[in-house]
Amino acid sequence: MIMGKVPPFTGVFIFLVTLTGFAQTKSITGKILSEAGTPVAGISVHVKGSNIGTTTSNNGSFTVNAAQGAILEFTGVGYIAQQVTVGQNNEITTSLPGTCGVSMKLLL
Image (cartoon, rainbow, N blue to C red; front, side, top):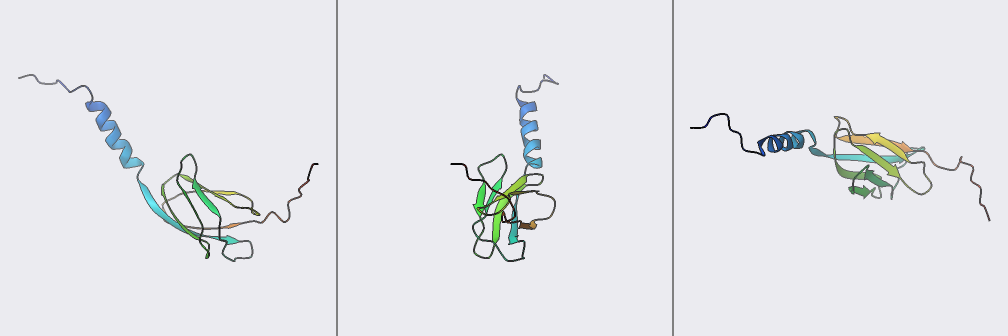
């Protein structure tokens, strides 16, 4: 009987099983509001560094799967982009400032 002999990829298998335990995603729900507190439809909600994303509904709400520590990016025409880090809470509500106060120049 041979003792102490470990199959060649056992360490890799254990590492991958451990890694999946840390990177589990959860369902994040939330609402995007304007500076005035009204819901904003059509805002892009994207998990940074991935191809996961969605768009806010007519009442400004969204649902997206992301891991704790992931960064959600919120972008939309007429609004300044925001980033929020997913924490322990499964719900995120944030407001996006409008670009009305931003000076823009058109070069012709």
